Image 1 (spheres, helix red, strand yellow):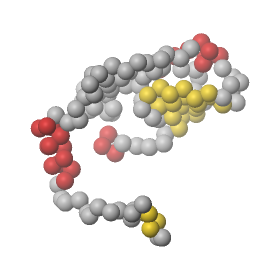
Image 2 (cartoon, rainbow, N blue to C red):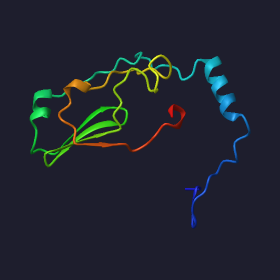
Image 3 (spheres, rainbow, N blue to C red):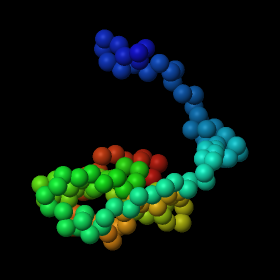
Amino acid sequence: MAHHTADGYENNYSPLPRASLLKWQWERLVNGLPKPPANGYHFPVDHPDVAWIKANRTETTLTWIGHATALLQMNGVNIITDPMFSKRASPFQFIGPERKVPPGLALADLPHIDIVLISHNHPENA
């Protein structure tokens, strides 16, 4: 691939012009982007067996909850990655991107969590 060089990764795109973020946001707002999928965000959701998950101490499992949130159960330890259960992806619940699909597992349905793993940050929400 063109961006792989002997010295590592190389950006093939020239530096972005000043105010490109504002231009992109304006065009996104004016054009109503991104367009919703044809199904209007109505995806089938398979709900896990909550009682089994809460009682599990021996099976290694990974339960995807939504976006980057997952519950990993391994050796009797419950690890959750990037927990996001709120209605909006924002530190404020009155502004910010609204969740399109509810989490596959409710916060109240989680077993005792031993470890919380944060793998990434969204700087626009910091």
